[in-house]
Image (cartoon, rainbow, N blue to C red; front, side, top):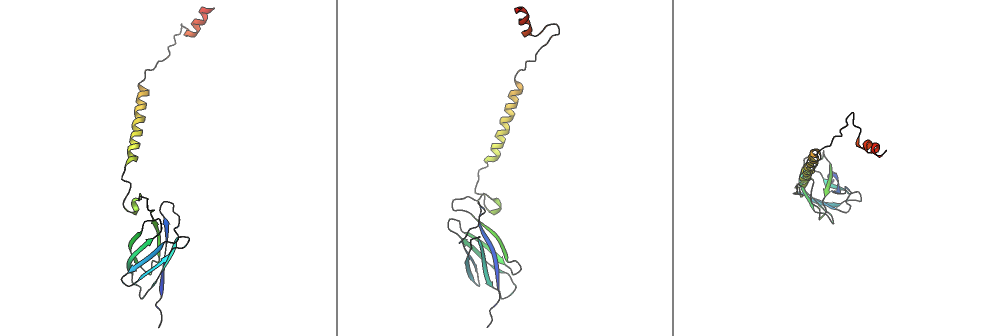
Length: 156
């Protein structure tokens, strides 16, 4: 009896904030036909070996669990033509997802635009105040020397 050939699917698990690999994370793939699991190595890389009976895609749920991180779950389709699963970024237990590409934006405050508008408004007000201050232009008359020369001539 011969074994069916297995296909190796590889990916990497990293910390979203630090972009550092997460070692020892439990990676599991569950489909109707099978459930397999493995652990990431020191570089955060994992390999899933799945016995392939044909060239069709296999749909299932990928779950990643690591100590100190939120669990990750996603429905994926494995294809023999695409064996690289890419990077999966995990959030720490106390972190908020601030990357809109990765899902819900956890930071609902829109303070940055407000701070920018306030800074621009303060700059404009300061410029208006400085420009509205009365200016004293020095007056030099041809026949009258400046005041400091007048005082000098009287002292002599």
